[in-house]
Length: 114
Image (cartoon, rainbow, N blue to C red):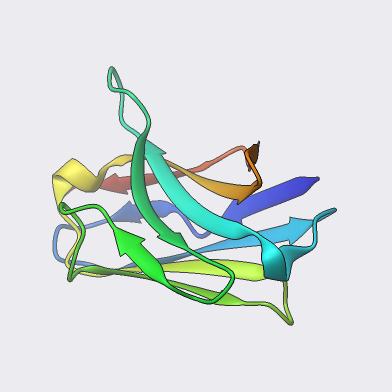
């Protein structure tokens, strides 16, 4: 199983980024997919999830600013991040979950700074 996250970078406060997570080795369409993040000195936390039926769930801190989506044909999940804040700075990880089994990608760094 491989989950390859990309799209991170340095952006100014108020800016936008779009993260992608390309999956292989799993039946992508039946997995719940999610984005998590970990800031320095903090625990990994949920950002957003999307189920196989495209039901979504967001952390309160990103609700209304971030949008999670998936393209089953491309086996890819996305995270559109708008109105970024310095507190969004973290390594962002993609996750695939099915029947209690979790898979993780290596993460992509997002830095929000002026």
